[in-house]
Image (cartoon, rainbow, N blue to C red):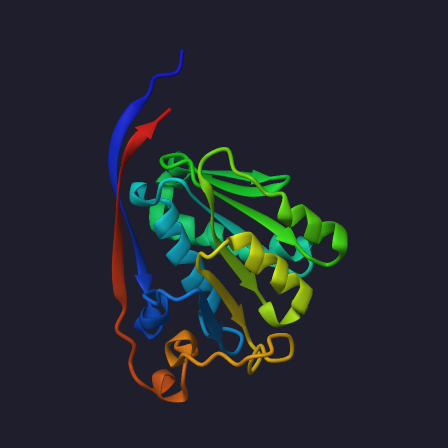
Length: 216
């Protein structure tokens, strides 16, 4: 017989303050652009693990998209796993369930899930349309290497979100090759690390997530 135990835990993560404006952005899109190694994906992964582990966000689920589905394993999936272990340390397995086939992550406290998909052809695009979750709804989509996506990919994801926020990360100058109108909000682009930011000493922001729940 399995015994349920109620526990309280305070997870912590270190955030680069360069990304604070984009993490606090409340518009539909959050676009992070910059070179490889600038910390875009690390920031996105930690931000989502913090939110999805928080009972205040119970019922929220995340879809992670790359053009080629298989490339998620060694990029977004690995980044999210790393964020879990940074925040929860040796207790990670008590709070998060990891599934390798198909790739998925599930918080044992909130029931929130992260799933991974690709959009390389029409069959995969159709599969994205039919995604459902046993607990809650799809609330966020993370598009990694977003400039690889075609306009039809973006249209389907936009429709699937039904009005909720979608972040994306890329290392190109803009999305204008598939998005006819430019991003006009300066705040939507603040995830890019500028040259001045790289020269200055970085003070780390530590963020805590208080978790109270029942582990089974």
